[in-house]
Image (tube, rainbow, N blue to C red):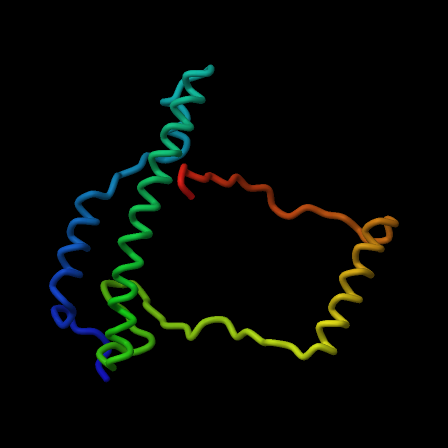
Amino acid sequence: MIAFVAGSVDSRVGEMASVAESESVVTPSADVLLASLGEGEEAIDRLLAAMVAIKRQQRSLDDQLGVLLDQLQQLHERGDVDASFHFNDTAFSWSPGRVQFTYPEAVLALEQQLKLARRTAEGNGSAVRRHGRPFWTIKLPGT
């Protein structure tokens, strides 16, 4: 098995990488961007419009990356690339995925009892409530 040799991958991958690099947008720092937006409702509209544009670009890049990851998986399955390697100072590592279990009925019954006990503790106040780190979710139309 070889690690990864430039040129051993389908030439379309290199072409797609070149396109991705040429289409990448140099983004200013957050401070510069905020300062350039100004103030008021128009500034908020510009901020939100910029976020939507980036989110759309992210979706497109994720789709392109998915195709390339599928090709890399095929190369790995054929033995053309190792499970872990470096290319252009970037580390690549394959993961078999998360282990999942299917439990017998007796365990599922215990799980239901635990869920009921949790709901009871939440309802009577004996469970301590806390919040994780706040975050925003941005969903584009059609997602």
